[in-house]
Image (cartoon, rainbow, N blue to C red; front, side, top):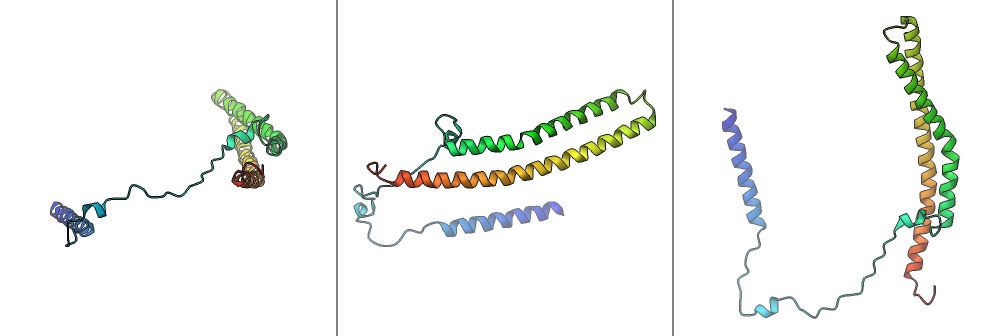
Length: 168
């Protein structure tokens, strides 16, 4: 019974697809077919000049040839968030050390000591997640400010690229 329904559904969908495809095909227009040269595309069509600009933004980061203001902002942001980043790395190392210690002493240590260490590990994990989320939020807001600078710089470069070479 299910197979019969499946076959009927497939046949119906196939029929609908065929009808819609045939309806979209272009029907030949009745009329004189003596002017094939008129329907051919013209070879001498004037194409307007187009301008295309591409900005290689990785060049902005080059300390020697890049944009000085962008590089100084990037250095300032890295310097600002470096202590928090090292703090998170230290906390991650302490979490890994405590987790390894729990695994190593699981069969030997007292149950109260293991429970206390697991509680401490859970607290450290919660603290790590909270600090990582806060750092991500701070860096995202700081990156938004720097991307605003980058957008302004890109707009200036685009305006400069549109000026004739004699004005530059």
